[in-house]
Amino acid sequence: MNITNECNMELMSRYEDNHFDLAIVDPPYGIDIAKWDAIDMKPSKEYFKELFRVSKYQIIFGGNYFDLPHSEAWICWDKTFKYNQKLNVGAFELAWSNLDIKHTFIRYTSCGNFQGFEKPRADYNKKKSFHPTSKPIPLYEKILIDYAKEGDKILDTHLGSGSIAIACHNLGYDLTACELDKEYFEAAMKRIEKHKQQLTMF
Image 1: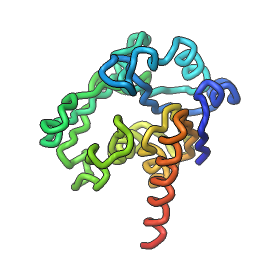
Image 2: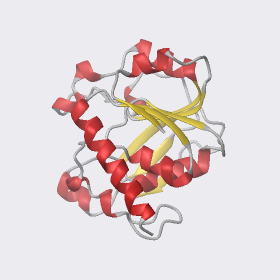
Image 3: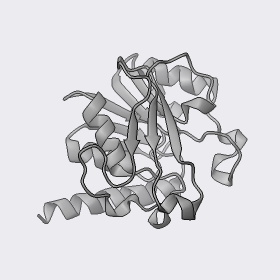
Image 4: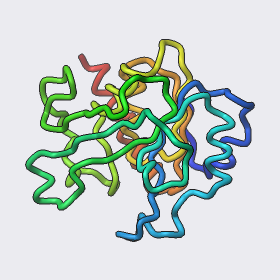
């Protein structure tokens, strides 16, 4: 894995067209509900232009908040289960994609069963996460299992809590990612390294 603490535009500028097979990104939505999602945090048109240039396929969480091309391949993450009632978070989250898939909506339930994952992971609880928009590792694992192919190069321009890096490590995918915020970057790297160390113990 190649993970850096830098601006995503700088990272993408170093790569040629279609270098990455699949970009899975979760940028700020710019809906101004909190400091970390202020309007001025919303990605620019230049960001999406670069993202589409360097990657063949894209999955963009919060795609319904951005001006993106029409797609028939939306992914719907169903987050409805009991902790949402306490944390007051949305029941669903949409991800835009240009994948060649037959279904308009695909639902990943968060009730502890990610289509084959029998139990929720320990770090699923957002209350324990250092990042405000942390997503569960099994969600990224299932997306990779469903939509990535062996040998694919994966791109993430907003690393956040590092869940996608752990998923890529678990499944053996080559990941290039960056995180602009130094504090989040350092915390994510510690989380990733701790996960690797735990795996080597068994």
